[in-house]
Image (cartoon, rainbow, N blue to C red; front, side, top):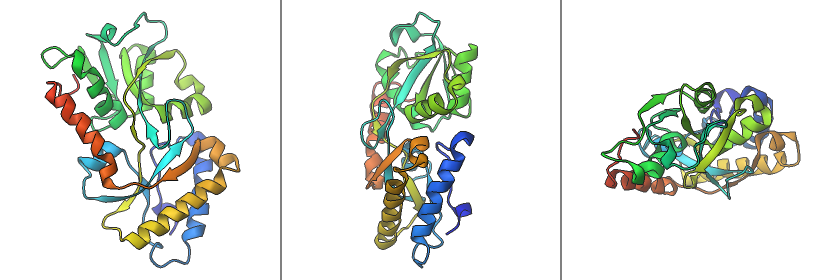
Length: 252
């Protein structure tokens, strides 16, 4: 296995790329010599498309645990952010504003806030407009500039930016948070036999445990890993269905 076949794009900002590389070198070293794992490309994907547009393409290896605010165990959530200077105090105050989302298949950017705002929607609408920005970083910039009034930002992303790129969260404040859901899993192309899955999981767990003693863990805020299966992400589909049952199948 080489570093070129192992990509972890979810939280790989330039400021922490070096820490990611050190972590994955440890991982590659632990899997080297195993014929079962040598050519298995590993990556990390958002949990919502894992159960929708990417369903059947990946097998889960494990759930990362991040030591950041608003997370407990292997969970994350969306943070509803607004400009710090605004007077918005409740979710209801956001009615008729413009919402910035990173992607329409994002769990923290779309799926979780869709369920959060569903009870408030009238005739299937709550916001005046929804704009797709392409990333959580761009959504934050939209709120900072006034291009949008509100966004839902993955709490791990928010914590990493606050630590390593504070200007990216300057001038915004957290108004509310969504429900919690499982963190974006480490995955490999399906089908993955149980022996290989166990080998990859053990190598990841050992790499993360070793990194906890050094700067890589501090930079990545990655503190552990938990077992996972595709079914672990069924609650994300239930949130989707609940929003639909409330007449809010589309965030708008």
